[in-house]
Length: 238
Image (cartoon, one colour):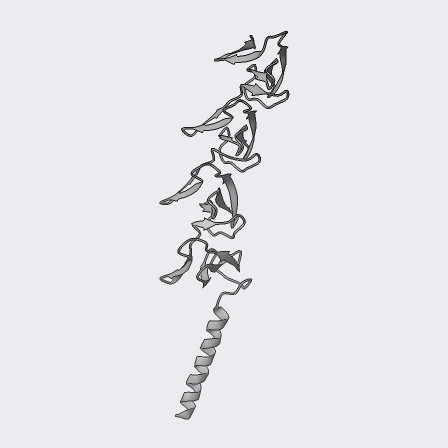
């Protein structure tokens, strides 16, 4: 009887060792690509390229077990966090950027500095990028935005916002019904501009400037007591 008990105890010890050996460990080998395993309430390990690597679960549900599988809530993430669903999009924690899962890491794909920021509505991520800074990431070419100081109109080119035109007029750059309005009734020499052969006045109101090849150049200097004025669609020395 004691012999059978010893054998049973030995078997239990062996089984225990097997269970411990199979527990996922950072850097350890794994077989099923994309499999997740909870480490604690806010973190997990995920199988990528045959090895376990850490993944943060910043969403409200954290990391939890659902049936026989683990689920890591990444409805909120940060730039460069490990991710597990290629092409998925989420909001950054501060709601000022949209991130996309690329090659197992979250990457900033759009700046969302507009009034509504980045929001998750159901399963849809919405990004208000009507306000952006030069060099910010963007997703759609010819998408326009205002700079935070409202002095510059920006346009999306090849995944980055770049200067489209300066907005030195009294109204600056405004967001009106999700459309960008740039007051370019004033400018300085060499300012960026978006419409060739469009005219404006210099800051002192003494010269007419014209847009050529994306920049304002001198067109005419107002003589005597005449001043440069913008009257509706007309620009001239009056």
